[in-house]
Structure formats: structure tokens, C-alpha cells
Image 1: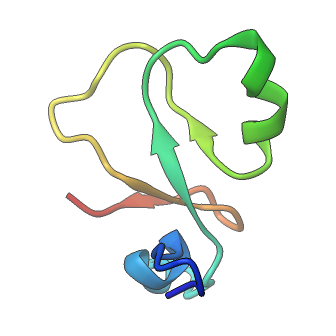
Image 2: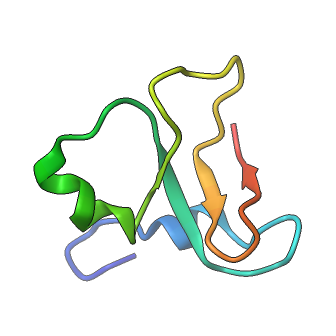
Length: 69
């Protein structure tokens, strides 16, 4: 947990179930505003505008695997 009380997504997600890396990124759905896209691109994974039947909230920055429910 960060000093401001927020939870780091890497702590919440745990290690990647495929490669074991601790480089989780949140998966975001929808069309991001152009003004924030560049800022968020390195910290999140954009999954497009269509929600899958089972959306996964985490993606590995190392291998690209997605997990969680």
C-alpha cells in the first residue's frame, strides 16, 4: 500500500500466473481521451471498446498474459 493509502495494482494482482513477473498493469476498456492516452500508455493496457464476456483486470507487462476476474 502506498503512503497515500492507495493500493498498487502490482500488489493487488500478484505475480503473473504465466511467467511469474510482478509487472501487472490494469486493463482499461473504452476509448481514452487523446489528452491522457500518452500518459497512461506506459502504465496501463488498453483493450479496446468492446468488453469481453469475462474481462480480465490485469495484464502482464512482460509476457502480455491477462488474468483476474
